[in-house]
Amino acid sequence: MDIQTVNDMNYEAFLDNFGNIIEKCPLVAAAVWSKLPFSSLHEMEECVYEFIDSLPPSGKEGILRCHPDLAGRELASGSLTMESQKEQRQAGLTSLSTEEREQLGLLNFQYKTKFAFPFVICAKMSDKDKILQEISRRLRNDPSQELLKGIEEVKKICHLRVQDILSKGLPTKL
Ligand code: 2AL
Image 1 (spheres, rainbow, N blue to C red):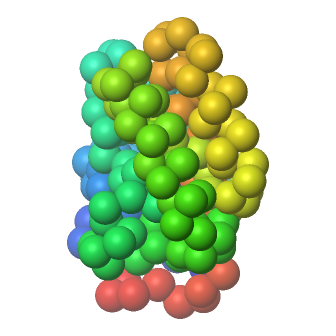
Image 2 (spheres, rainbow, N blue to C red):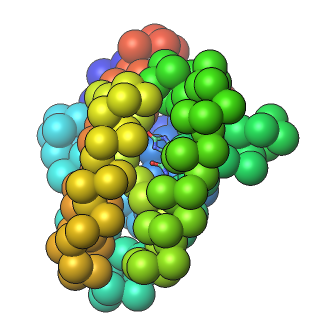
């Protein structure tokens, strides 16, 4: 898919294709569609990031809260979004031992108790051991540092989701 194909998309087609590049936040794609056309896909991604950066802290926290826990309730119940399911599987989170699952569950709980938003990391760029290390390390940060770090990870997740959509070739419902 090239930038011309994206620029030609009506609102519905754009949302069908890019609505979940930020987990459960189709509003971001809806806002970005208003800014079409773009001269490159890179410019489109930059527009996503600018939108997120322009949000007040409460909006950024809201974006983090739309992310499911890693190896959490939604993974166990099969209710993750398709994208998240794939990312968590690739990071090895669908094949944790009981001990590892309990350890991550406890760390997720401690993280959310401290920061009031979930721990977010780009799972595809990590693996279960790194995730356990990172959450333990990041638990020591202060809330403003973690808000920035979490949003940085959201952008990495977004970049890989855009790459994934583009690699699929033809868009749906152009
Ligand atoms: C996720 C997710 O669902 N996919 C990903 O890369 N990271 N969630 C999270 N809490 O970090």
